Length: 90
Image (cartoon, rainbow, N blue to C red; front, side, top):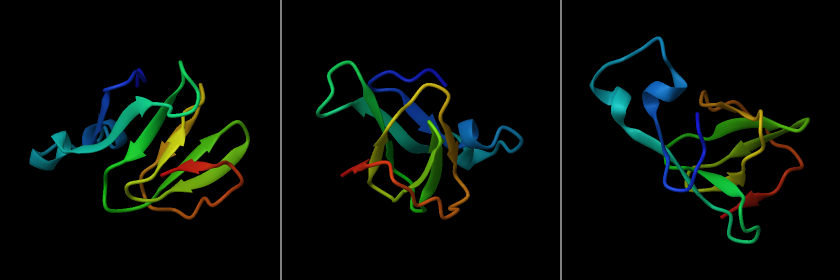
């Protein structure tokens, strides 16, 4: 996914094997980083926590929270517990 401020993450981006009426639901949004100009964060707009892995850290992004995006990072939308040391942005 190309991450730029305003980009939306839809359900079908997280599960490319399943497409139905709910597949176009927006479940996340890329926003400008509030403290680091030129960087972006991913906000979880879904009702379940996501796992996020980047730069050797595993963390959990709770609903309505966000985390800074790193090149090569990956989102696990299955609600796995990935609590780690990376900081979340409310």
